[in-house]
Length: 313
Ligand SMILES: Nc1ncnc2c1ncn2[C@@H]1O[C@H](COP(=O)(O)OP(=O)(O)OP(=O)(O)O)[C@@H](O)[C@H]1O
Ligand SMILES: [Mg+2]
Image 1 (cartoon, protein in one colour):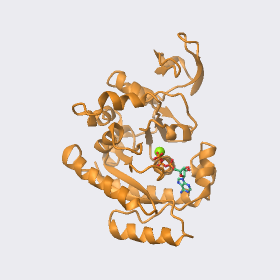
Image 2: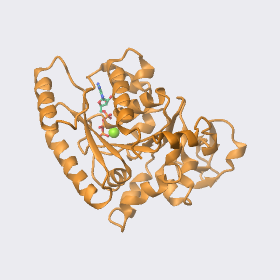
Image 3: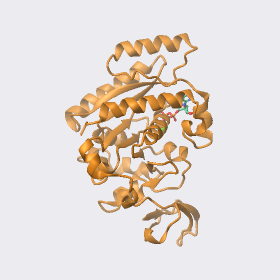
Image 4: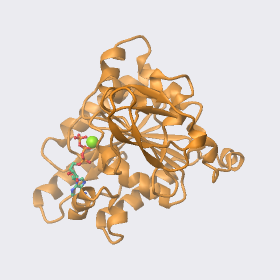
């Protein structure tokens, strides 16, 4: 297992067979910084998988990017709550935090973790060593950290850089039913890699005046990706933070449904104060409150996605 000192970035490759606790306190022998390290799940520990049965069902290894270059539209909230909803419906789910802000990682209560940066700098199978088993059944996380910013500098524009995530996922993707990727509000290294690796793009969109502009931009990008790196990618628009008390919200929602007919999820995610409250406690909203309207709507979207992607491979 790879542990990185968050202070001086020194990497340690520890024998993970001797660490049994899910997390432990470590001291960097170089700079003496003390930090919490997380023991990654060993892939052979994902024992609830019946790979042969999953292969027959043909519904494993579905990769879903949550993407919109517009900021604050609920990408991270969607990734977290959709991920937990899928896990609660007995799907094995890997969440990938592909944003330097590390909001998904923080929302699950982790900090100072390793990230895809360390996976790229390690050997070809190093990604599996960095996956953390969260406290929720069937829910795993590949976290993010501030080193991720270096990937954009190092690889953006390099030959075939869009395939780096897809290549690294290849040896492990069939061990999960769903892999959900949270992307940043920009189109660079991370978003292009996520779109290249995915079968489905969920585009969260708020009911505000400029939302159609954001959707149009990402749909144009998807057309380019289709032509260049991923011909089978499919987009779907998810209306988020819908305020049923607001006339403007209803008008824009109707416009979105008309403009993107056939692409929009029937279920919308309503504005729900419990989403923010849950975030303060580092909890998915359904864990915070089972009666949460937004939480139940995410569960409905999860059922829709399972139905859409079953037999996709
Ligand atoms: N259904 C909801 N009801 C109320 N608040 C919500 C809802 N969904 C998300 N939020 C809040 O909106 C804010 C933005 O959400 P989030 O961080 O998920 O957006 P994002 O698109 O990932 O942002 P960024 O572009 O910065 O990555 C957060 O404070 C979150 O708690
Ligand atoms: Mg986010």
